[in-house]
Image (cartoon, rainbow, N blue to C red; front, top):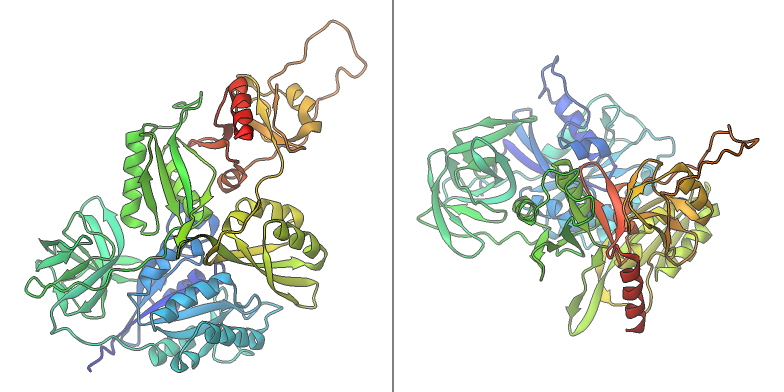
Length: 609
């Protein structure tokens, strides 16, 4: 079989924060893709606002580099398991993967996840040991860890013969030996050319092109990005798209785009092995096959793991509804959720009995919270219920998702972490003491036990702990209480503004969530109670003025720092009878039933039932 030696297709995969995007930056820079005077941002592949702010990759993206007359198509993938749908799709477009591993941290839960997906597709791996310049780097042990992981995941003999490149992406250095680094990316490029197989040259066969990523442009409409699996494709060509439902539709290729660096360039033709973008059909979807009208033959649909977590999205009906947002109606919210489905294959949106509520299912809290954050930035106002894990029936038995949790923590906090995960039905799998005061713990924990745990974990470890978790498997439901919030909340009694005096009166009752001057409504959660029950409080109370003088009258009133919550923290904090109200300007927690008397009646009813 003839091969296209002038091209290589590779995906960069790794655990979050192990340096994938920084490595791609250096590869772009050293290949001469940019002009010498061209201004390029750090982590150039992270183009979204949230990606730049958080320093994480959310959407998979592709770029192309020319090196020694060879085009290397590189796909940068997310490291979070919540965005695993992006990783799974990408594997269909490439012939090999570069597994990036931190030379100190070693293999982590998401390293396992992304590598498993690559090995399932029988892709050829190379390993890049990044951050080799770290003072505590342990390259020899980490290579052994990586080899153990390959064996554990059932890699074949060829995959086990992986080459290793040692690099420091942030410094732009790499080499084939751990103890010496040179300011070049040549060892990375050479290893890719020598070990990643070239795609087969089938340009004379009938066309097959599978859509793997979707993009949108105001001028040309929907754009499908994918790989020409077989044959060739050109502008103006008449083609047939094999739809998800089995139907066929004909259309003409209006534009064809190739990639070089960070730019998308118009091209006239592409052949088997090329990764290109096409436009011309308005309702193109992920997984669909574009083929020759005379020989319509669909490729297998891209299989994506099912969602594990769901939330209810509701139209905002709080007393402050419509004050801060631009889009508040059910029609607008439904349109936006359905638009998200076009590009996010891991998401599910299902209608409910109410026309003002939808069940939205995703791969985890981060997956859903990124969608919510994008919606609020676009001007949407909505309410959210507590996240729930999705229970499946397998062989007549109800099963729940389990997660593999890896924790790195100083020795002194080890006991409290083990106790809290025990309360959440966690089962310890492994414990390694590195001998430098740090302990690595590995647990298997039900997903519902981890809801809201991150905040508690950071408090327990005073911010020194690192927690990583990834979906493991569905297992029979564990009986009894698993996790959940132990503390009650302080609920506002009436409409008004929070006062310094009102906050001072409540400080000994718990932690306050609102600043003085914040607008409050009856039923809004204003703080966390020290005890397990909820109490209704008057935070808008004002000090009565008298003409009696006091020796301390001129002292300035001081209050403790209030607790501010991010969107993720607010979602994790929710209980069954609460909503999170999200607007472009505010994140508020509230009770589902705002009226105090009605709330107490509902609580009594639920206890009796």
